Image (cartoon, rainbow, N blue to C red; front, side, top):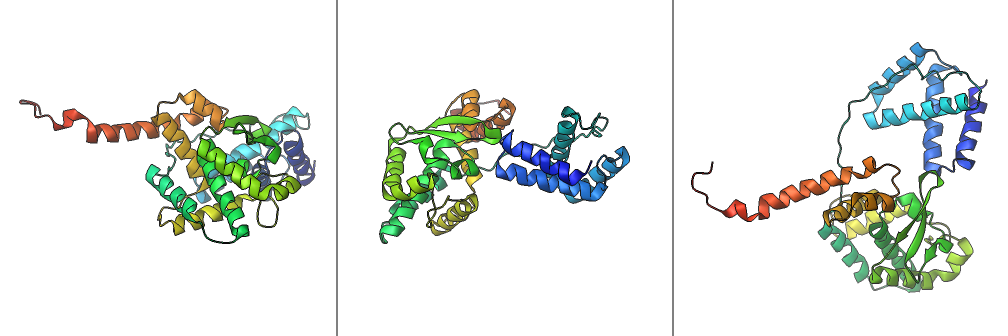
Length: 304
């Protein structure tokens, strides 16, 4: 078995059968190549795998190590399922990690408001500039309205947006689709204005969010756009697309929305992934209670 040929077949399977997105496939390819360049065998020995895992611990953070090992384990599970090998070499290797709780970074509400106010206030420029300013506003509003990932929004097809109802079909990880409702009238209006200004190019391209050349508005372009407007709005924080997703989930839970509902909107396959936002909301709640609870201003004789 030649691992290069077999790896390419596996990645083809992941692309067309599992319908994984481009970023995931790219990560798989990098992780598998790194593994085989180190072990130099189709089926490495247990000792070689253990050495590789040790080497990963010397170079990377825990989250990256877990991903790299998971990529290789998934590859050998595929070979095992297909009958290409009898047993995965990872079957007898136990990899344990110390669980680290890293709370997602969110954008303060006032900074989201500050950013959107700046973007809406930009009224100058010619017709072309208006088109793409409307796009940037519509896209930023869609981030906060849906909690979608950057590649999900970048890849929204025009046919999957119902401008009359505000319902958007989003293609998530593993080709799983979900529907997210934009219910805020002002956001529906900005989406309609953006579409009206760019209708011909959108219909020709097929994607809802397009760039100045009529192509798909890529993930990297979206990140650069947010960075530009954040700076121009006078916000010192480095705001990324994924921070809108974290903020969306956290603020919904703070408002009392059930975590299972947030899970469905975000497209999480496991509720455990969504539950981290409960911890953020709880931290905020504790902060509010420390500052605002009337008991803090009472003078109780004999209390410690």
